[in-house]
Amino acid sequence: MIEIGVFELWFLDTGIIFIFVIGFLVCKRWNSKRLFHGICIVCSLIIFSLPLVLKWYSPWPFASVHVLFLSAITSLILVLKFLEWGFARDWNEIRTVPIKQLIIDFTSYSQLYSSTEKQSSLTINDIYRMNTTMLLRGVFQFITLRILMHLIPDTWLSLALSSLTFWIWPIRYILLSFILYISISAVTNITFSVSAIIWTIPVQATFPAFPFTSCSIREFWSRRWNLFVKHLLHRISFIVIPNWVGVSQTMSNTIRGLISFVLS
Image (tube, rainbow, N blue to C red; front, top):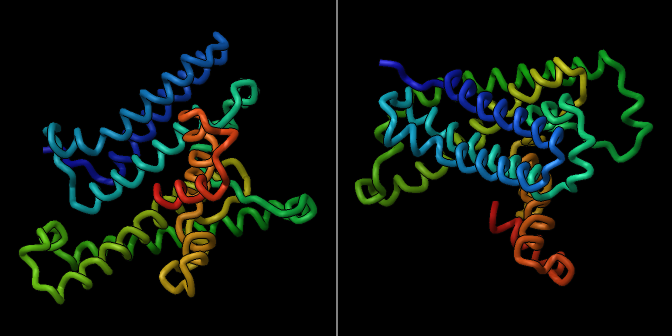
């Protein structure tokens, strides 16, 4: 029987992104903003329901709880990305985006610099060194994750809390938090660095520093925890949601920031 592993999961996600790219080209040719919104919504629904369909209705089981975990993570990231492209950008801006830039945006997290001088000072060797370091870091994290998942039984991670003693609860939550961190970090580091090496662009890590050594919630959220998703949630909570509910002009930045924090 075929099992869904990491590579099969990446293949499915890539297929959905490919469908989105084709739809993007069609919408550009027809100059249809509504069709593009519809494609973004459909792709979001497909990628969001993919883990559930594969889990409950597919004849192909997941290879492990780890793969199911990765499926949920990548689905969430892609849903946010589809919604950002569909509703957080101006259509006239979208129409001018070349296909290369669209692919880069979906497969990497471009490094942002405070000044053009700093960006222009980077050489190709600097970019390759940064991206190679990120790739090696992602591979090391992936190997660590595989070893960790091999040592921890899948059945123990999926047990109900009622079947565990009270003092085991924090241990499992700590392990799940670490697995979540290293799963996202490994997948994004490998994916983003490979894309960056192909396109020769500087990218930044989703987790620039180990998040669990933060000294405050602000440092944890603003500087250490999943900056890629934080960036997407910021655009969705500050642009998309206010536009949907019709209060884009009156909603304060404090409320928008609170929405972003709650969504995270």
